Amino acid sequence: MTTPSEVKYICKRSLESAKIGTDEAAAKQTGLDFYKYLFANYPELRVYFKGAENFSANEIQQSDRFQHQGQQILLDCNTLANTFDDQIKFKTHARETVHRHMTNVDPSLWSVFFTVFIGFLGTKMTMDGATKHAWTTIGKVFAEECNRYLKDLGLPTS
Image 1 (cartoon, rainbow, N blue to C red):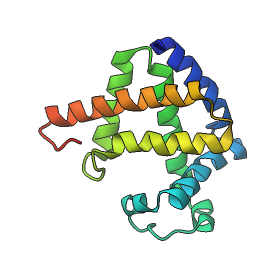
Image 2: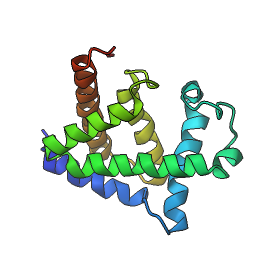
Image 3: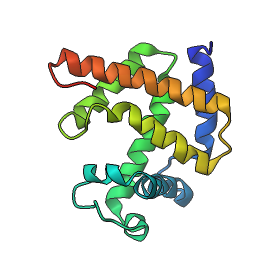
């Protein structure tokens, strides 16, 4: 069994291939690449992007919205990886994510996201079994906490 510290280490190492940043063009591009990957490989999820459901890869590339969202989603993944061995911080971040999305995200997507993210990371690096397992572990714990919190709020869960 992989410990939380090992999961954290493996996931942080994998994020070296999907950098975030404010100045480096390559870091900004990674967030855009995530959304281009999502739109190309998971067209059923486009409905969650009101006004952009039919965006092409070029339109995503030119979009300030997706540049910002791309950085936010990569920052969230970095936060989850960096806090996985501190469950209070990890679960607090999960709950704050629920607050940002509770009215517009189907609860089943809390776990689906990590399938998408693992696939995307596989376009940036060689995805080995340990890395896939580590991100799957984070995704499972994250989705469980999101759904637990939704239940506590009296909202639908998956």
